[in-house]
Length: 128
Image (cartoon, rainbow, N blue to C red):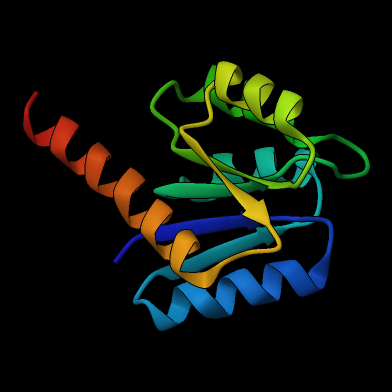
């Protein structure tokens, strides 16, 4: 079971993702509504994975990704982005995000992406 931090300024999106992931045996250990909260919760909770929205008030997802990666270069972050934000997704990946999921979400794509990224991490840790 993976410990996941869900970051999105929309409560509905956090609830949707959390419910979906819980049904697939993942544990939601925290939710944040902006980048500052995400950094603080990451430091406190050390999740296995962060699902990070990009466009948020206070601090956006790109800045939060950079801060988390500075804190922990092994952090696993998946960006959640709306259609038409390809340029921002590229910037997020360059900042350290491992993958991205497009909104509106396809439930199977969310689960496949989360499992694939976590499995890749498990494999790289066992091969070291």
